[in-house]
Length: 298
Image (cartoon, rainbow, N blue to C red; front, side):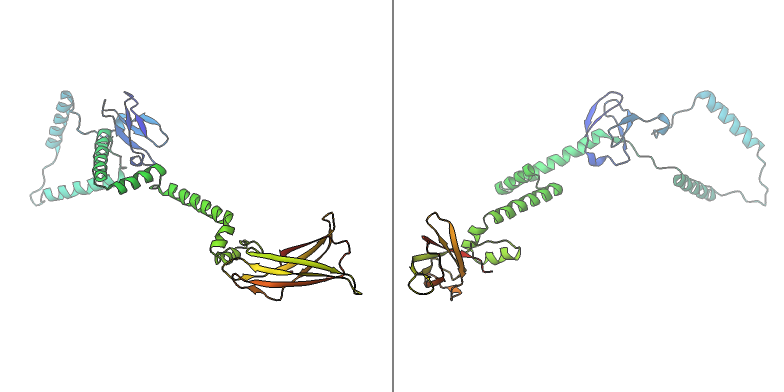
């Protein structure tokens, strides 16, 4: 923080940690003015009666004489102690003075001693030189890491918390947006995503229909639509076979009828295929297209 002398307006840069909440008395190194500075940035001169004097000011000559005369009169008027009454010992006087001094220290409020700004600058300069010397002894990697921490504020605890939270949010968002790619590369992560209610696998991914053919049979009493083909596993891991949905469309690709069929096999081995045979009863005679997809079992 910058502090200016209220008398000569000399400016000083002082560490904020050296100024307590209640403020502190400072002495200007240029003009010697003693003033108080508080945390609100206000500076004001200290009245002379509040400034602890380093040396007692000498009294005028007339006053000294008057004081000496009064002291002689008091001594002359003071009665002499009796012979049987022992005079007070100097030890008792010293003990009484020590007790009075201790009592005075308890009753008088403590006054902050003024701080010499030049002394503060001297200590800061010594600390800075010590830091430079220690930095010179660091290796190139340590200096690079120190520079990174200084630029990013990594060495400040409050900023460190914000940086950790920021990187945590970035990582979580990245894990969510790339969940399908992560689950493809590491299949066990799909169950981890599932613990948080996040779907990380595309239904039927890695499975495909091959050599699908269908025949409409109307010779019998009940017309039927027979679908034949294969379900192929194109991956190197076993996959669960979901429910197969059969949709029958007309010439305009409008849905006529749909049915869900669960294959007999639940799992399909890596690089293998399963024969598919589905019979649809009472299909529409206007069926032109047959569309197969995988859906979740209900």
